[in-house]
Length: 418
Image 1: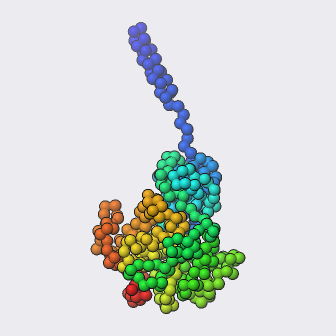
Image 2: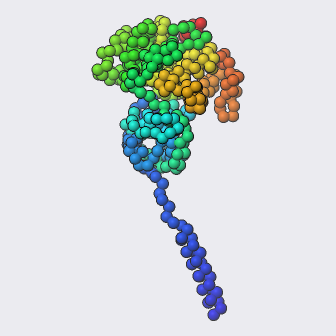
Image 3: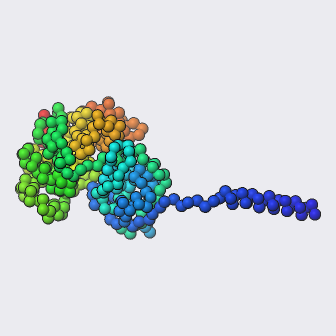
C-alpha cells in the first residue's frame, strides 16, 4: 500500500510539473514573413533581383524602412541565406553587403522625424548587393523564390533615419545657384573636375545628357555644348538604351548630344555599379582608349545621376594625376550638395556617414592596387599616411591590370595632368 501511495504521489507531482510547463508554453506568434517570386535581374546598375511585390505593398504587410530581415533565395539547385539584411530606401550599405532596396521611397520632412511615404522610383522591391553583381555572382534565375522574414523591427532605424531623407526633386525650379555654380550646373550635376595636379577644363562630369529619366538631359546637353565637350564616356548606356531614348519627345532638344553620337564621339560602355569587377574596369579602359584614339581634348564622363559609377571613375582619374585625398573628397561630395543639399555644415553626422560608406570604400579599394601599402586588420588603410604618389601608383596599376598599355597610360596622364 505504501508503494502504491508513493507511485501515486510521484504521478501527481509529474502531472503538476507538466501542467506548469503546459501553462508556460503558450503558442508563439509567427514572425512576419513573405515568400515571393524572383522576377528578373534588377533593371539598373546594381544587378540584383526584383521580387514580385511593390514597395508600397511590402510596407503594407507590416515591414518598415530600417527593419532587419533574414532573406532566403532558393530553387531546386541552390539555397542562399542572408542574415540581418537592412531594408532601406537607398544604397546605404558597404560595397558587397546585401540590402532590400525601395529606392527613393521616403521623403523627409525634417531629418530624424517620421517620414511620409509619398513616392517610389522602383516598381518592385529589389534585393541586391551594393556595388556588386549579385545576379551574376550567385547565378540567380527566375525560377527562384525569395523568402523575407522580419527579425528585428527597426534594427537599422538609425541608419535609415540618418540618410533616408536623401531623395531629390526632378523639378528644375526646386534648385538654386550656390557657391558660384549656376542653377543649371547644380541641377545637371555638371562640373569640371579640378585639383592642383590637373589641367583645367579638360575633364568634366555630369548627369546623363541622353537619359532624361530625371529631367536633366536637356541641361547637360546645353552645358556640354557651352563647354566644347568633344568626347563623352557614357558609363551607363548600351545602343539598345540609346535607341529607346530616341523615342522620347525630349530627344529633339538634345541637339549637341545627338551630334556627338552621330560623329562617333561617344563611347557607350554599359557598366554596372560593380567597380571592383573586371567588366567595369575593362569597360573603363576601353572608353579611355577610345577617347585617346579620337584625340579628345575635353572629355565628359557620366552615368545616370553622375554619382556612383561616375564617382569611382573620378577617383581613378584624379588619383592618376596625383590629386590629394581632400581634393577627391571635395569633388565627390559636390554631388551630394547638388542633389540633396548635404554638406559638412548642413549635417556633419550624415555627411561623415556618407564619406565613410561611399567615398572611403572606393578609396580603400583603389589602394589595394599599391602593393607598397599595408592594410589594417579590417582591410582599410591609414588614409592619413597615404600620399598622392600612392594614389597615382594605385590608379596606374588598376588601369594597367585592366588592359591599358603603357603608351596609353602615358598619353592619358599627359592629357589630364599639369
